[in-house]
Length: 459
Length: 103
Image (cartoon, rainbow over all chains, first blue to last red; front, side, top):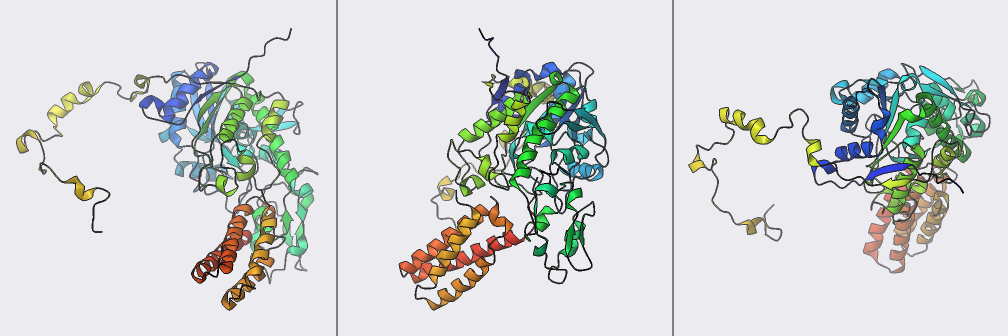
C-alpha cells in the first residue's frame, strides 16, 4: 500500500477587512502562525526578511508596514530580524537599484528604513552585488550553481515576504521569484538570466539586425545605445556601423529597450522561458543556503499589477485583491496564488480586459504579464516541483480570525478610560463648559433635502 | 487572441477601406494614417503582447469609422476619425518609444 503523502499546507485569508483582526496586517500575522512559520524561528536566530522594496516611482510594492509587523513578530519569537533586498541588473535606461547606494536611496524613498521597520534595512549582496555565497545545484534543471546574496545565506532563518503580481519576464512574481531572482546576488542574477549562455543568453538567442541601425546622422539616440551597455560591448565603429560583441553579452538587459524598438535586436521566447526555469533553480539555491527547515513564505496577493515592482510605474491591478497566503512550501504557495487569480474575475479597465481574460476561470498572467507570447505562469512552478523544491498539490486552510484583542495598539494596549481619563481631566479636549454643556456653537436642526442627490444645488 | 501584428494588418485594411466611402476629407486623412501604419510593419512592438491592447483599440476605432461611413452619419464619422487618429498616434508613439522594462 502506498503511504499517504501529506500535502503542504497553505494558510489563506481573503482580502476583505472590517475589524482590527481582519486588517491585512493582522491576517498576514494570522496566516504566518497558522502555516507554522513561527516554528522556524528559534530564540537568537538572525532572520532575513526578503522583500522587493520597489523601483523609484513604482507604487504597487508592499507597504513597509507589512515588513514592520513581521519583524515585530520575529522579535516576539526571540529572533533578530533584518529586512533586505538585493542589487539588480542594469535592466532599464535609468534603473534605481543597481548598486547598494542606489538601492538604499530607493528603499528609503519607498519607506523602508530602520525607523519604519524597527530593524535594519540592508542590501544583502554588497555595494556592487558581488557579496555572495556559492551553492552547488547538482539537482538543478538548468543551473548547476547559484550565487546567493551573502546576508541571506548567512542568516539563520529566512522569510520571503512577497508581493504576488505579474512579471514581464517571469510571467508571475511570487515566492519563487522573490528568491530565484531576489535572493541572488547581482552575480547570481547574471547566472539566472543566462548571461553568457551560448543558447539561451541574449547573445546566443537574440536576433541581431545591425543593418537596422541607420547611422549617427539619422539616429539622434546613437549615444544612448552606446552608453546602454555597462560592459562596453556596443560600439559604433569608424564606418558608422553598430558593432555588438554578442559572445561577451551578460544579458544585463540594459540595451533591450533601446535596440528592440529600432528593430536592431529581438529577444527570444527561448531566453525568457529558460530564465523562468532558472528562477526555480535559483530559488532552490537560496533554500539550500539557509536550510529547508528554516525558510518560510508569505505571499501578499494584493495590488496584483500585471507587471513587476521593477518598473518605475505600476498599472491597474488585473484581479481584485486576492488575500494573504503563508506556507513552508514555495511551490504550493505560488500555485495557490495562481489558482486563485485564475478563479477570480478580472478588473474592468485593466490589462485583463485589454487582453480578453477578465472572466472567472480565465488564465490571467500568460497574457497580461509577459512581454512575449508563448510563456506560461506554470513554467517556474513546474520546474521547481520537478527539482524537488515543493509540491503543486496543497491543502488550503483558512484559519479563524485571531480576535481583536490580539491586535491592540502594542505601545499601550489599555482601554480608553485607563489610558486617557486622567489626561483629559487635566487637559479637557471637549468644552463641556460652553453652550449648555453641548460644547459648540451649532444649529439645532438643518434641512438635508437641500443637499440630497436630487437637490438643485448651484455649483 | 489576435497577435498585435495581425491586428495591425486589420487596422490597415479597414482604414484603407475608408478612402472609398465618398468623403474626400476622410479619404485624405485615411491615406495619411495608412502610410503611417504601413511604416510600423515588422517592428518589435507588434511581436509582443504589449502591443495587443493598442492594436486592438486601433482596430475598434477603425471599425467604428467604417460603420459611420456605411451609415452616412457625418457627425459620428467626424468623431470616429478623430478617435482613430488619436489611437494610431498613441500606438505609434508606444511602438517607437523605448522605456518598456523587460525584467
